[in-house]
View 1 (cartoon, rainbow over the protein chains, first blue to last red):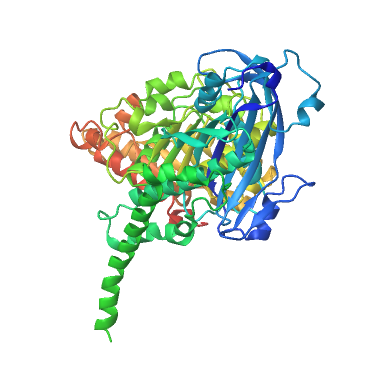
View 2 (view 1 turned 120 degrees about the vertical axis):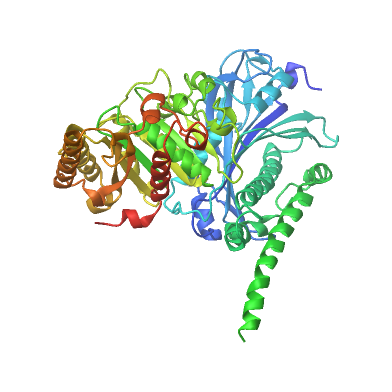
Length: 323
Length: 305
């Protein structure tokens, strides 16, 4: 693994945080409106793709940082550089903001002029050697006061987007945001990428630990984690909706009405790997085996459809008997 | 739906009553968030009986968030974290009940553009997540009142329903002060209009809640002498007359909460156990709170008079 400071330019660690929420608008945005919303920079286009689903990805914006990195062992590591942030909108409905950075094994002991950092967007250098393991664990734990807080940067971008005049803040249903923090240790090129751990914590927090070859761009890792976050958010949101609908307890029609937004806005969004880098797509297999994301989703969808069918039977009877 | 709880003076039971309303909405299945914007004297952790949160919010509460010291204010899941033995058992079918406490050390502060943006961001964000958001504001024409008036006048929040509850006690001074707080020269309406609110819309979104109202017909007063009883009735009549003259008469009232020792002294949520088992609180109070909670979103009570 990379330890010598001479190889310091090669990143050994990439970390990020994704925040996922329902777009607060009555109607989903079409491709054109999505591009308008995500135009974070005048000099770069928003990427919009319509196959296999409508997906828009903003250009990256940079935030300069000079602060301590969060570490799990309390080591004080000052770091300087830029954090990259970007936003994605899926089917004009689910909005995500990601902040991420890469870090080399070691950096110079002196702060250099900002220009040096700006030419390497998304790279953060530590003063001296980077305690890889502690920094990766620290990133998953999240930044405290005075430490690099990727969530704050992602949240800032999300807040900026939510103030856009295109949004009417009349979302068709209430839903929670989720936060997904990820840390990817770099392995030599040629080694297979792997998903080491996916955890669900409280308050909508999820963490992902990855191993990814050095030659995989950080943006591709960010894309994979956005895809995981999107589908985890869909599961979380539909499960909550089913819980709140009081199926079985409330009388039929009202329970079904509570599920209507899922049918209108969410059920068609399930499409794992749709925009994930080809070299990383198979990491999904791990989650499909255990805990089985798609298995749970199918089960939820089936439950909703069964309820709709059951509720339709009395209506059918009525219609037949009044003929 | 945003519900702002304001009052002319302290001691109107604003915090404890609005917390009870939040509790009733959560019982009915809504996801509810309660924000303690009473910056001078945050009390919500006591009302919801979450003493640990008091420490957690020491420097990470709403105050620290609004002045930009933390990226997110602390959230307390009341069902999970409360030490109240009844609240701990979350009833099935109930919604989430989340408290965002104020900081212990936080005082009043001026509204800057940055604070305002953070306030707007927070309200937008909570609105996308919760059915009902109760914001408990410091008494009088405080910075908290100014800030939310300013925030709700912003374009971003124009699509979000906001309603105001003004709590006052049932006395001559309190009735006059409540009318002044809303309609006075420096009142909420004037302040709102100065910030770009439409006057009729804002007036239509304000209702009064009469707190600690002694009901002369109640069993509590059945033993008083005839003269006392007649005097109470006369006072009550005069107060109604005064309220109506000051523009806060019947049509502007969302509801009344009876004089209830448990609310006055314990300053905590009233649970069904207090009413049914230990019977320290009366059924009238429970019903009044439940009715009020229902009326928060019942448009019938918010039509223009």
